[in-house]
Image (cartoon, rainbow, N blue to C red; front, side, top):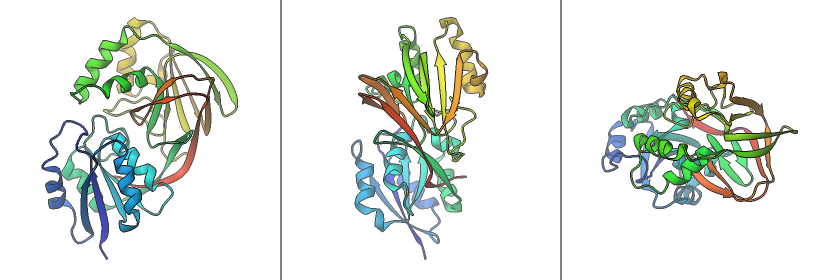
Length: 290
């Protein structure tokens, strides 16, 4: 019996033209295994609504978009018998890259055809859902700025980072990591399920997506002249070797005494007030990988 697979295409994700995506998928998907259906998200949160309103009609739900689209769909099917697939067309595609899903539409569709699945962890942040990486500090600041620029893509992201970096000031954060309190003057803090933000920027190079732990990477205050060195380490998977980095693994983290805290969840900016709790959910999402 053919599996019913829904492709939810985010027309605003990444920089690629969307007019040909549906056609490529139709030409590539194995019609002997799958019966494909297509729809388009129209606004933030719409992909979640689509899934919740039709989840019983499909076996596999596919996010055709970036990490934000993946988040919207994954939160609706976690802890169910449904399977998530990804065709990455976003700016970063962090979770897809970790799972070695090709950044090419035809090749990603062929990955779905092979239907190799894996159960992975997810993270709950207060009442919010995270599939890949969340964070506070500079990356949250950039995520908030990036959502308001018209031109997307990696190059424009880097331009924004350079523009904002010199004027950015570190903040002091209080955390409780599996019950142990620490205080850090940090440039940013990431709470990672997988290894990377996207674009092969490895913020948590030792993370494993099914080990029952959240990887915390803290980039402490550092001299500006060290920025290039840290940037190189970020892409070389050697960030944790820097003396300006602290890293931990934990099942539960609390960010204490926060007020108007800007954060990001899977690259999407969000504002928190009050303490923030991060909790791992063991192997709570079934996903197609390479």
